[in-house]
Image (cartoon, rainbow, N blue to C red; front, side):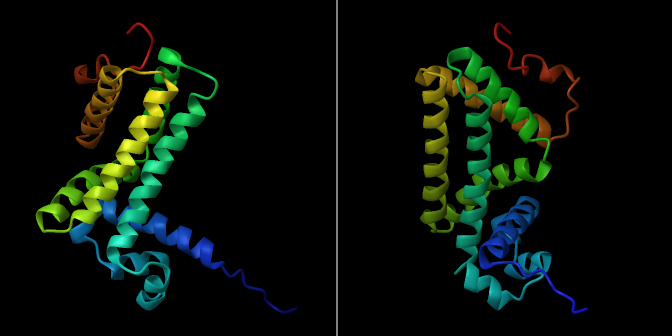
Length: 186
């Protein structure tokens, strides 16, 4: 009987490259990540990697876009059919679940640091791209929960505190987590 191998389509391979890029960039940042490391993680050659993505910047932006898209999709799914505080609480809880994947959280952190570093080095495109993704997320959340600009600011500030606590490894029962519950009335 002949052996059949399951070959990935170009789109499936592209998806695996994006996932691998998220992990690599999360661990090492934009500057510290090599396309060689990404290609090795996926099991493809570097020339093939560059057929899928024309540059390291394109890989980073695709990984950042996926990361932000995952957050937005989780927020929208969790708050479907809700509004106001109920939607805000549902999105907050969904975020807490989402960042249990440390590589996703660290990818977010690297997006902020790496885009600032790229801009400092004269590459403004990465920063512009990350800011556009953030604006899209901000607008979607504010619209879904009918938030004022101040409420949206508080929601995202709360999320950034949670990012910092998780990134630093604070356990959920530490006193600094008090008030991070996303419960109406808390």
